[in-house]
Image 1: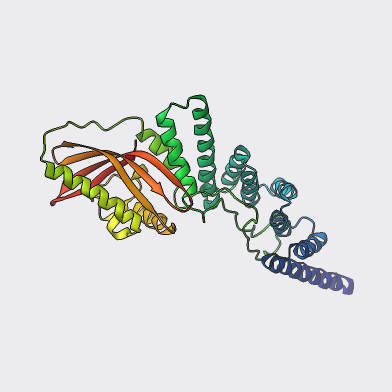
Image 2: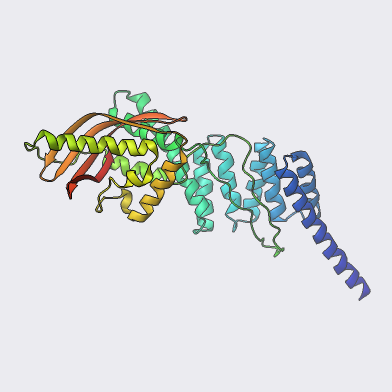
Length: 342
């Protein structure tokens, strides 16, 4: 009986020591003392080799140290031992994306989603990876046919999505909260990888946006041209210029005010969700300059179709793309009803 009590006490003490080692390793990692952090986490793993949280933290530390190959091995083995956990698959994807192995990153993220269909981080990252793959495909297409203007336009749009948000990146997931062994979870805060990561927009799904705009770019809306006064054409042109000016000033309220109440949002998302996404995205850039030129205006009743060239410039990206906007006249104002690339 005494032996059993002693064994239980020793086991509890070992668990406390392991938890302390993990917390110390986490603290040292945040302070940038990576060799010491690795030493602590190795000590914790030595006392419990199958512990998922300790191994997960070790993978993060190795990645921070630039030892990506070893980190991949850690996360791959963790995914093999605990296939019910989505986090190791997600972090494998982060490492593969750093190495520009986007097909492997996509496969890892699909496994994470299959494991946990409610894992939002993996869906977000999968959209980012699809954007990178789309960019590579368009670049290859242009190598084979440099004269294809539509492909060049789509590539420009994708590159704009990829480059306009320098703060956004493929994200690591939080540490697994529990394991198959039933261990009590130790809080582990995931620190971002030190190595450069592919930057992509977080606030919208680039893969879905690319597919939507590619479909929209295949054909123009048909409108009939009718004689109108020069005043109407000037008013539409002025509305377009002022819309671009509000965007450049990052005046979100004025920018959104140029959209009609029946504006057709991309992919059928709600107006509220679309406005929230646009507000967040416009507010992220430090400096913007949106310019429009080569305007061609045609009218059909109370609607005006404007085809033009849009030039986007920020500290991190520049690009030009052809766009079409359909304005509708409401209460004496020309407001945007439809907007698309192409």
